[in-house]
Amino acid sequence: MEEQANISSWPESIAAHGHPDSKNLKLYGRLRKAESSVLFQARTGRIGLRRFLASARVPGIESGECLCGQGLETAEHTLLACADQPPPHWEPGTRFEELVSEAETAAVVARQLIRSGKLRQYSLAAQLLYNTEEVAASGRE
Image 1 (cartoon, rainbow, N blue to C red):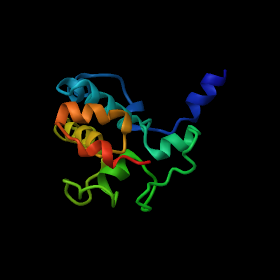
Image 2: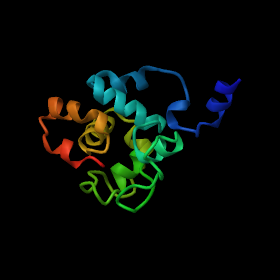
Image 3: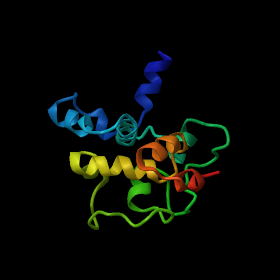
């Protein structure tokens, strides 16, 4: 019963709609394992960013606010609005749902989230996949 209550309290997410089909499978088909994991987490909203961690009551995360001070730290915020990240590569007005629903942009989204340094559990993946040393140093404290 408690598990059902927890599941029903999850916020709606784009990944909650529909079953795996050829379009969904195409999103993940050419991604490496870490990229596939990050994309899935971003699509569901259950990703190791402050908004989710605070809602899960992770010790040491008192608020879901991004350290940039510009909003809640979500995948959408990190990609489209975070002042601590490089400017987005997308057209102004691009919707997050579009980015994570098209194979071409979903791959870029996954890579950018891994390279952001905000997902410290992916720092080794960033180094191995993209040969980036700076990612480990740019993560939050």
